[in-house]
Length: 129
Image (cartoon, rainbow, N blue to C red; front, side, top):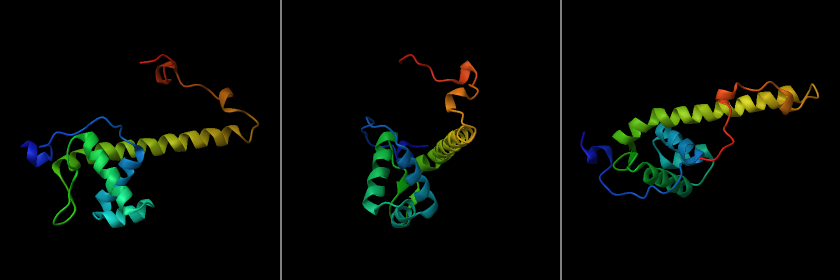
């Protein structure tokens, strides 16, 4: 497939970091196919959502949405959708697991540090990169 068909024909600044709100706005826009409705659904102004999508496109190096005549995913947008959806789902699961762990520790007058630890292979490393 040609670079232009993927929305990758331009040089882009990729110095930013992908943010969770950008991913959630992208997913809302995928479903709504309207910047106005996606912004309303996300609880932000339309310009804020537009800026976040533009920043995400710069980060990823290509256009995620065709804007005219109607909003539609580009080939890059279609490719990224399952990955970004998985990231959002994983973040939701992590938040739910943390909340459950805190709630389980609170009533029994136990603190989180006394709960069983994950095996060492799944713990975060304390050494720098």
